[in-house]
Image 1 (cartoon, rainbow, N blue to C red):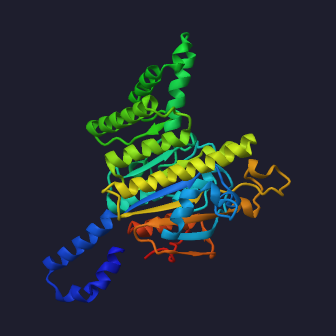
Image 2: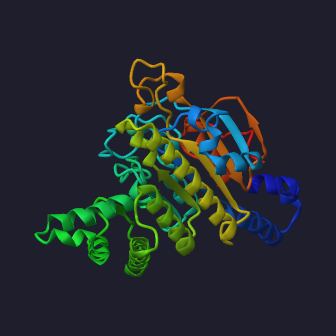
Image 3: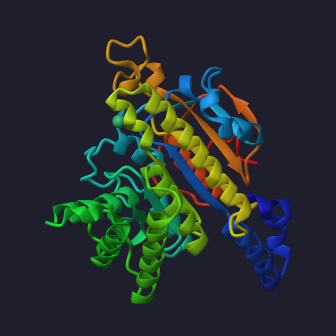
Amino acid sequence: MLSRDFLKLAGLTIAQRILPPALMNIWAQAADAQAKGRKVILVTFGGGVRTSETFSPAGLRNIPRLAELQPQGFFYQNCLNQGTLSHFNSTASIVTGNWQRVDDFGFEAPASATLFEQFRKAHKAGPLDAWVIATNKSFAAMGASSQTSFGLPFGANVVLPKQLLLDAINDIVKKPDAADVANRDAVHQRLTSLLEEGYEGVGWTIFKGGRQMDKNIRTTLTRALGEFINGPEVPTSGDELTFFITREVMREFAPRLLLVNFWDMDVAHWGSYSLYLQAIAKTDRLTGMLWDEVQANPKYRNQTTVLVLPELGRDGDMNTANGFLNHRSGDPSCRNTWLLALGAGVNKGATDKPIRHIDVAATAASLLSIKPEGMAGSPAREILS
Ligand SMILES: [Zn+2]
């Protein structure tokens, strides 16, 4: 419940004139505490997935976890990407609430303030409270916009776990003794030193907030990456690593606002339909595991809203291009995706009423009790309880 609704329900719009200021403060603090507890996690099926392979009668078998969760949440059958059909701009539109048209290789920051900046500025939230964890290596600039009144001082920490791992392996391969690449300790060591090298390198942007905090973050990431590399599961997938790091960040820092970008399904560009389907199934499994973590983690349980949506669709099979391989035709299978909202503050239900990608940030802002500046999107009233 938004704090202003809480105040209204409590009759405080009238009471303001009657109650002594001290009592007012207690009520305001209670409402504030409630608003402060709310957390929002955005999960993108990045890289693009069609409704035909997900929330269609034939597609449901690829997404058993989401299919099972759907009745617990609110489902939008038509979530529209009306912007540029490329990765950086699609996700930047989702996180800013404005259609973005910046450089798509990630060399430019989003042009409008991101939800992270709006949230941190409005709530005076610290640098540990907003994170982007992305498989797509071009998302290093996703955490903060080029808006001068916002920007990096209010941005999210960005971690590109797959990129960190790839850089570590690349560095080892370049060495004369390339046999080391199969040596997990060597990869781990190189990763550790990559993290030591500082925040401005590609792969992670962590905002400075005092030496001690930086050290904690570095230690946490190093440990998590090390456990992943040396753990029982062979690190075969960027998205699995993204999930693993996300869970560590949740357990360690419990941020209130988080974007998790899964991206393995964009393997479709290589033309293998079965690999594309496997990646969808994996994204579904990892999203399910993320939901399980929300339920199991007392810092998230009962106070977290999870919004899951594809970044974009993919071309239709009847398209003159190559169907599922690409996502540039602009036909309905490319632009019409879906959104599933789960958890705290969400009504149960479903609708075919369209919602736009730019409405997602506005909805999240509403859940976080922020009045965002300059967002073209509007909150999805249907889901907000
Ligand atoms: Zn792509």
